[in-house]
Length: 105
Length: 143
Image 1 (spheres, one colour):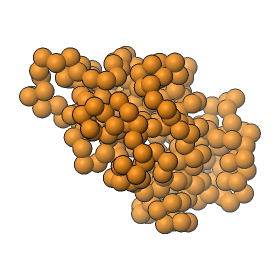
Image 2 (cartoon, rainbow over the protein chains, first blue to last red; image 1 turned 60 degrees about the horizontal axis):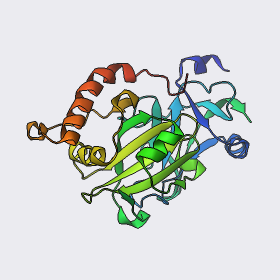
Image 3 (cartoon, chains in turn orange, blue; image 1 turned 45 degrees about the vertical axis):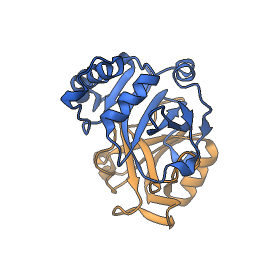
Protein backbone atom coordinates (compact mmCIF):
# COMPACT_ATOMS: atom_id res chain seq x y z
CA UNK A 1 0.00 0.00 0.00
CA UNK A 2 1.36 3.41 -0.93
CA UNK A 3 1.80 5.90 1.88
CA UNK A 4 -0.88 8.26 0.54
CA UNK A 5 -3.45 5.49 0.55
CA UNK A 6 -3.28 5.24 4.31
CA UNK A 7 -5.38 8.39 4.56
CA UNK A 8 -7.93 7.56 1.89
CA UNK A 9 -11.26 5.98 2.72
CA UNK A 10 -11.43 2.23 2.41
CA UNK A 11 -14.38 0.40 0.87
CA UNK A 12 -15.30 -3.19 0.26
CA UNK A 13 -17.69 -5.37 -1.65
CA UNK A 14 -18.77 -8.94 -0.99
CA UNK A 15 -18.70 -10.74 -4.30
CA UNK A 16 -17.63 -13.88 -6.10
CA UNK A 17 -14.13 -14.75 -7.19
CA UNK A 18 -15.29 -14.22 -10.79
CA UNK A 19 -16.32 -10.64 -10.06
CA UNK A 20 -13.09 -10.11 -8.13
CA UNK A 21 -11.07 -11.22 -11.13
CA UNK A 22 -13.02 -9.07 -13.58
CA UNK A 23 -12.66 -5.92 -11.50
CA UNK A 24 -9.00 -6.39 -10.63
CA UNK A 25 -8.24 -7.00 -14.29
CA UNK A 26 -9.90 -3.72 -15.36
CA UNK A 27 -8.84 -1.64 -12.37
CA UNK A 28 -12.44 -0.53 -12.00
CA UNK A 29 -15.45 -1.32 -9.85
CA UNK A 30 -18.69 -1.42 -11.81
CA UNK A 31 -22.32 -0.85 -10.98
CA UNK A 32 -25.65 -1.59 -12.60
CA UNK A 33 -29.24 -0.58 -11.79
CA UNK A 34 -31.71 -3.07 -10.31
CA UNK A 35 -33.66 -3.33 -13.53
CA UNK A 36 -35.23 -6.66 -12.63
CA UNK A 37 -36.79 -5.01 -9.56
CA UNK A 38 -37.82 -1.58 -10.84
CA UNK A 39 -37.27 0.47 -13.97
CA UNK A 40 -36.16 3.81 -12.56
CA UNK A 41 -32.91 5.18 -11.24
CA UNK A 42 -29.44 5.52 -12.66
CA UNK A 43 -26.76 2.84 -12.39
CA UNK A 44 -24.67 3.16 -9.26
CA UNK A 45 -21.48 1.60 -7.97
CA UNK A 46 -22.19 0.26 -4.49
CA UNK A 47 -19.86 -0.64 -1.65
CA UNK A 48 -19.62 -0.78 2.10
CA UNK A 49 -17.36 1.58 4.00
CA UNK A 50 -14.44 0.00 5.79
CA UNK A 51 -12.11 -2.95 5.28
CA UNK A 52 -13.22 -6.32 3.93
CA UNK A 53 -13.75 -8.66 6.90
CA UNK A 54 -11.62 -11.79 6.93
CA UNK A 55 -13.20 -14.97 5.65
CA UNK A 56 -15.46 -13.40 3.04
CA UNK A 57 -15.02 -13.44 -0.72
CA UNK A 58 -14.73 -9.93 -2.08
CA UNK A 59 -12.54 -6.93 -2.66
CA UNK A 60 -11.20 -4.03 -0.65
CA UNK A 61 -10.30 -0.83 -2.41
CA UNK A 62 -9.78 2.90 -2.17
CA UNK A 63 -10.52 5.71 -4.57
CA UNK A 64 -10.21 9.47 -4.83
CA UNK A 65 -13.75 9.74 -6.17
CA UNK A 66 -16.08 10.86 -3.40
CA UNK A 67 -19.30 8.89 -2.94
CA UNK A 68 -22.74 10.46 -3.23
CA UNK A 69 -23.94 12.51 -0.31
CA UNK A 70 -26.80 11.15 1.72
CA UNK A 71 -25.90 7.49 1.42
CA UNK A 72 -27.11 5.25 4.27
CA UNK A 73 -24.59 4.77 7.09
CA UNK A 74 -21.86 2.31 6.31
CA UNK A 75 -22.61 2.40 2.59
CA UNK A 76 -21.11 4.29 -0.33
CA UNK A 77 -22.79 4.93 -3.67
CA UNK A 78 -21.39 6.47 -6.84
CA UNK A 79 -24.16 7.39 -9.27
CA UNK A 80 -24.09 7.98 -12.99
CA UNK A 81 -23.77 11.68 -13.65
CA UNK A 82 -21.58 12.51 -10.67
CA UNK A 83 -17.96 13.59 -11.12
CA UNK A 84 -15.48 10.78 -11.63
CA UNK A 85 -18.07 8.15 -12.46
CA UNK A 86 -17.43 6.66 -15.91
CA UNK A 87 -20.42 5.81 -18.05
CA UNK A 88 -19.72 2.55 -19.85
CA UNK A 89 -23.29 2.02 -21.06
CA UNK A 90 -25.68 4.92 -20.61
CA UNK A 91 -28.33 4.15 -17.97
CA UNK A 92 -26.99 0.63 -17.62
CA UNK A 93 -23.37 0.39 -16.54
CA UNK A 94 -21.00 2.74 -14.73
CA UNK A 95 -17.62 2.30 -13.10
CA UNK A 96 -15.10 4.08 -10.92
CA UNK A 97 -11.36 3.68 -11.12
CA UNK A 98 -9.96 2.34 -7.88
CA UNK A 99 -6.82 1.05 -6.21
CA UNK A 100 -7.33 -2.48 -4.95
CA UNK A 101 -5.99 -3.14 -1.48
CA UNK A 102 -7.14 -6.69 -0.93
CA UNK A 103 -8.77 -9.53 -2.81
CA UNK A 104 -10.21 -12.63 -1.15
CA UNK A 105 -11.46 -15.34 -3.50
CA UNK B 1 -48.85 -6.95 -0.11
CA UNK B 2 -48.00 -8.21 -3.56
CA UNK B 3 -45.07 -7.90 -5.86
CA UNK B 4 -45.34 -5.61 -8.85
CA UNK B 5 -43.59 -5.95 -12.21
CA UNK B 6 -40.40 -3.90 -12.60
CA UNK B 7 -42.00 -1.64 -15.20
CA UNK B 8 -44.62 -0.55 -12.63
CA UNK B 9 -42.05 1.79 -11.06
CA UNK B 10 -40.15 4.11 -13.37
CA UNK B 11 -39.07 6.64 -10.71
CA UNK B 12 -35.86 6.44 -8.73
CA UNK B 13 -36.02 5.39 -5.08
CA UNK B 14 -34.42 6.65 -1.85
CA UNK B 15 -33.13 4.28 0.83
CA UNK B 16 -35.34 5.11 3.80
CA UNK B 17 -35.11 2.34 6.35
CA UNK B 18 -32.59 -0.39 7.12
CA UNK B 19 -33.29 -3.33 9.40
CA UNK B 20 -31.23 -6.37 10.23
CA UNK B 21 -33.25 -9.57 10.27
CA UNK B 22 -32.51 -13.26 9.78
CA UNK B 23 -33.67 -14.96 6.57
CA UNK B 24 -36.59 -16.76 8.21
CA UNK B 25 -37.88 -13.49 9.61
CA UNK B 26 -37.60 -11.95 6.17
CA UNK B 27 -39.82 -14.68 4.74
CA UNK B 28 -42.33 -14.24 7.55
CA UNK B 29 -42.55 -10.46 7.19
CA UNK B 30 -42.51 -10.47 3.41
CA UNK B 31 -44.14 -13.63 2.08
CA UNK B 32 -43.50 -12.74 -1.53
CA UNK B 33 -41.19 -14.08 -4.21
CA UNK B 34 -37.78 -12.42 -4.27
CA UNK B 35 -35.46 -12.25 -7.25
CA UNK B 36 -31.68 -12.32 -7.28
CA UNK B 37 -30.02 -9.01 -8.07
CA UNK B 38 -27.29 -8.61 -10.65
CA UNK B 39 -23.93 -8.87 -8.81
CA UNK B 40 -23.14 -5.30 -9.91
CA UNK B 41 -26.46 -3.97 -8.60
CA UNK B 42 -25.57 -4.38 -4.94
CA UNK B 43 -22.57 -4.31 -2.61
CA UNK B 44 -23.16 -7.93 -1.66
CA UNK B 45 -25.11 -10.90 -3.05
CA UNK B 46 -28.69 -9.74 -2.65
CA UNK B 47 -32.30 -10.51 -3.36
CA UNK B 48 -35.05 -7.99 -3.84
CA UNK B 49 -38.64 -7.26 -4.73
CA UNK B 50 -40.88 -4.40 -5.74
CA UNK B 51 -43.83 -4.43 -3.36
CA UNK B 52 -47.21 -2.94 -4.07
CA UNK B 53 -48.87 -2.31 -0.73
CA UNK B 54 -52.58 -2.54 -0.06
CA UNK B 55 -52.75 1.26 -0.27
CA UNK B 56 -51.33 1.13 -3.79
CA UNK B 57 -48.03 2.67 -2.72
CA UNK B 58 -44.85 0.86 -3.74
CA UNK B 59 -41.54 0.18 -2.00
CA UNK B 60 -38.37 -1.56 -3.10
CA UNK B 61 -36.95 -4.04 -0.63
CA UNK B 62 -33.44 -5.43 -0.94
CA UNK B 63 -31.93 -8.09 1.32
CA UNK B 64 -28.20 -8.64 1.65
CA UNK B 65 -27.34 -12.30 2.02
CA UNK B 66 -24.04 -11.59 3.81
CA UNK B 67 -25.05 -8.84 6.22
CA UNK B 68 -28.74 -9.76 6.65
CA UNK B 69 -29.55 -6.09 6.10
CA UNK B 70 -32.92 -5.31 4.60
CA UNK B 71 -33.09 -1.92 2.90
CA UNK B 72 -36.49 -0.40 2.27
CA UNK B 73 -36.44 2.27 -0.44
CA UNK B 74 -39.28 4.65 -1.19
CA UNK B 75 -39.96 6.24 -4.59
CA UNK B 76 -38.58 9.76 -4.80
CA UNK B 77 -41.97 11.39 -5.28
CA UNK B 78 -43.65 9.52 -2.44
CA UNK B 79 -44.04 10.71 1.15
CA UNK B 80 -41.66 8.56 3.19
CA UNK B 81 -43.60 8.63 6.47
CA UNK B 82 -46.92 7.81 4.83
CA UNK B 83 -45.34 5.03 2.82
CA UNK B 84 -43.69 3.54 5.90
CA UNK B 85 -46.99 3.68 7.77
CA UNK B 86 -48.57 1.73 4.95
CA UNK B 87 -45.71 -0.77 4.98
CA UNK B 88 -45.89 -1.25 8.74
CA UNK B 89 -49.60 -1.96 8.53
CA UNK B 90 -48.65 -5.06 6.58
CA UNK B 91 -45.25 -5.98 8.01
CA UNK B 92 -44.74 -5.67 11.75
CA UNK B 93 -41.06 -4.88 11.81
CA UNK B 94 -39.47 -5.11 15.23
CA UNK B 95 -38.02 -1.74 16.15
CA UNK B 96 -35.04 -3.43 17.77
CA UNK B 97 -34.11 -4.71 14.32
CA UNK B 98 -33.93 -1.24 12.85
CA UNK B 99 -30.44 0.16 12.40
CA UNK B 100 -31.14 3.29 10.40
CA UNK B 101 -33.89 5.54 9.15
CA UNK B 102 -33.44 8.45 6.80
CA UNK B 103 -33.40 11.89 8.35
CA UNK B 104 -35.68 13.02 5.53
CA UNK B 105 -38.62 11.49 7.33
CA UNK B 106 -41.19 13.87 8.76
CA UNK B 107 -44.08 12.47 10.69
CA UNK B 108 -46.91 14.98 10.57
CA UNK B 109 -48.78 15.61 13.82
CA UNK B 110 -51.90 14.34 12.09
CA UNK B 111 -50.32 10.92 12.02
CA UNK B 112 -50.41 10.66 15.79
CA UNK B 113 -53.60 8.72 15.42
CA UNK B 114 -55.15 5.74 17.02
CA UNK B 115 -54.23 3.21 14.38
CA UNK B 116 -51.50 0.81 15.34
CA UNK B 117 -49.33 1.36 12.32
CA UNK B 118 -49.43 5.14 12.74
CA UNK B 119 -48.38 4.85 16.36
CA UNK B 120 -45.80 2.28 15.39
CA UNK B 121 -44.15 4.46 12.77
CA UNK B 122 -44.11 7.40 15.15
CA UNK B 123 -42.40 5.28 17.80
CA UNK B 124 -40.10 4.00 15.11
CA UNK B 125 -39.21 7.49 14.07
CA UNK B 126 -38.59 8.66 17.64
CA UNK B 127 -36.50 5.63 18.49
CA UNK B 128 -34.48 5.92 15.37
CA UNK B 129 -33.79 9.58 15.78
CA UNK B 130 -31.96 8.55 18.94
CA UNK B 131 -30.21 5.73 17.16
CA UNK B 132 -29.37 7.80 14.13
CA UNK B 133 -26.14 9.29 15.39
CA UNK B 134 -24.70 6.03 16.59
CA UNK B 135 -25.89 4.29 13.44
CA UNK B 136 -23.64 6.54 11.39
CA UNK B 137 -20.66 4.68 12.71
CA UNK B 138 -22.19 1.25 13.02
CA UNK B 139 -20.48 -1.84 11.74
CA UNK B 140 -22.23 -3.15 8.66
CA UNK B 141 -21.51 -6.75 9.53
CA UNK B 142 -22.87 -9.29 11.86
CA UNK B 143 -20.89 -9.67 15.01
